[in-house]
Image 1 (cartoon, rainbow over the protein chains, first blue to last red):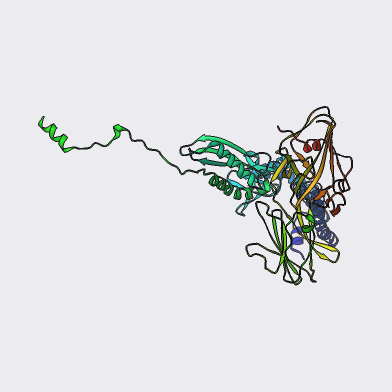
Image 2 (image 1 turned 180 degrees about the vertical axis):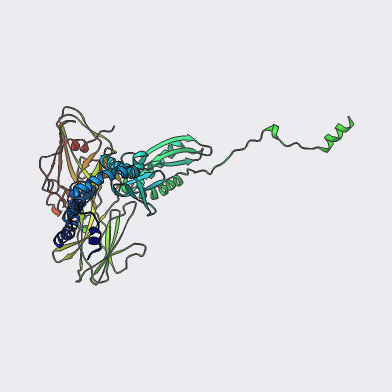
Length: 289
Length: 270
């Protein structure tokens, strides 16, 4: 006899009625046919929705179908086995109050997860930055969001954290601007520097022609005149631009004789801080007088 | 076997028979392509230089230069003929005239836009073409057309928008597109850039150059849809031209762009 049936025998008769062989077979049939069908159906619907909308909505729809289907299948199996569902649900209602107090954090995460589904601040595949954590969204689940970091680490962020804190969706928009601070020597021609930066952008095929790159004379630094160079790039080519544009800037600067200075200090010696020198003749004069 | 250096496109957009162990060096535009046949296998390697050199083709028995990274295609039977045909760029083109062009009300402009094609490399199995790869003959810069939060990625291309088909100095890899604009509105049209979609354009081989079908645009005002028409025949200027590459999409007559299209075709500087 199954261990499950042995346990069922010990439960009071008003809660369950002892199952005969047929209900068990029916329950097994529901489980063995229902669950594979549920997962298969959910996958098919996910594919259909993905073709029409986005991967994010498709995944959410699949999970919703799986969760609801699982609840229905488990309920059906319990009914087949002779469980009195209304008694179980009544007990579950009382238990849920106690569980609610004990599982405040989990409930908070679930509700936060619903907000994230509704607001959709990011989708699966988006690159997000939460605090110091940067990575691509792998999954948006009921309790947490899973991220794969650039170092290929698996990071779990509770939904509540994402609702409470500020985060950045780096790949939300199709194009991005790369911000590069550039310092040049004080004897450089400002116009020539700007021309060189524009030429670096023109020479790089990853750099978007439009919007035009940002070229700003930013500040007078301690050792250099500081510019900000901001070429635009399509988001998937961001790293390619970052890897190549520095070389282009250096080449343009070298071709035009523009120097990128090392940090330097100019020292002026004030007369009052000049070292005291001892002259023997002067010392002798002082002694005679 | 050396071919004379010329810009005649018929020399380059052609079929090349290679014996076992031979190498085709195909230098067109900025693309330098090496195709090497070894029994039933074909190896391709290429590089794109910063500035286009003189166009030339050469068949020799030298191996692919070792500094190039090759790709190999394997076939069951030895196939001796390599076909290289021009193909349209894989993205739309944002064409900017060298200087903004002002078209007064009720005035038409007939001009020619030229841009580099891609090289579609294939191996011939009898009359059947087995495509291998499509490579840029010139690396065009990326550009964005539309808002920063939505829009589309395109290639950037500057052109003189010449009034005369003979005036642009074309490389064999360049294709000439007859472009007509009619300003049917009551205001001045300032043409700064044009989004040219590649899919409805076919490529025709003329006597001296490659041609596309004609593109005609009617501008009726800022708030009215722009009417675009892609011809389905070779342009009149290309007398006796033959179809080399079919359009990816069937050219549409009287095609109306919706509100987004109106702004995406002509865009004024903010």
